[in-house]
Image 1 (spheres, chains in turn blue, yellow):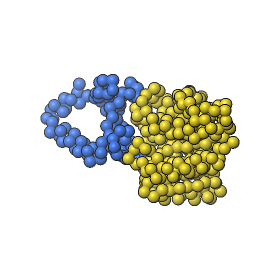
Image 2 (tube, rainbow over the protein chains, first blue to last red; image 1 turned 90 degrees about the horizontal axis):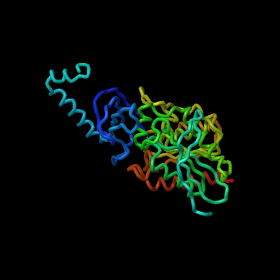
Image 3 (cartoon, each protein chain N blue to C red; image 1 turned 30 degrees about the vertical axis):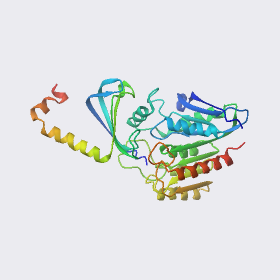
Image 4 (cartoon, each protein chain N blue to C red; image 1 turned 135 degrees about the horizontal axis):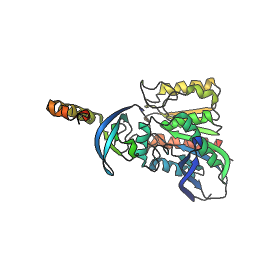
Length: 94
Length: 247
């Protein structure tokens, strides 16, 4: 099935795509058909910069369990980082 | 019949007069042929969809697949274009109808056209094939497991997709529906609901649901491929188009 469900968020950072590094401004997260992964559905994340064209994209297609492990690990790493370093790393603090 | 064909990228006038990219495949002989507009799935105007387009030409049809993501991502690879289209909220229904109308007109202008044209679509394209057939004068339409013809999409869904079963009264042509019994979108219950709407409106249709098959059973490059269902489905398509697109 096509789930069509797509979450979108604004963000900041950098990603490395087919043409090298670029600033990332937006992400989409969806559970739908993969292009490459050998599964009927995967958790897909696209880090995008629409202003730089469709090829400015870092794509991931993860099996659902792997996606949860990745999400949990990201949160755990952020939680264990020193609060002062985290606060200084917010875009508004730069 | 000669088996020679020509397949190439062309440009047609789509919705709002926009020039959009399309993939055209046509038999190379002097006969008149029916036309088929192939509506690609949500992953885009990709290699697999172009192969389907050539398959129709190999079976004696003029076939064209408009790139529904031409505007979002001109010249981009199909997967990047599909991601960009998704991030933009998908293809609006009115734009889809305009793009298919342009593709239909392009087919009818070909010297080899017999004047008859059908649509076929897979996945999200199945819904769009039904939408086109309810919006344009066509000779036949095929819906391969299109979701959200009936049924309510998940709440908060940002894509511009809603149920269109209320358009059934405007269906302009016979409809062939091919579905998997294990599909969730559309579920067998949703397929049954569409059948009721078609019957209530006195429309000509035939539906086939294949056991052991789920969504995307036609796609040989995906794990969802079910050869038995796909082979039977193709036989239904050739029979259906043979009846409604013949000169």
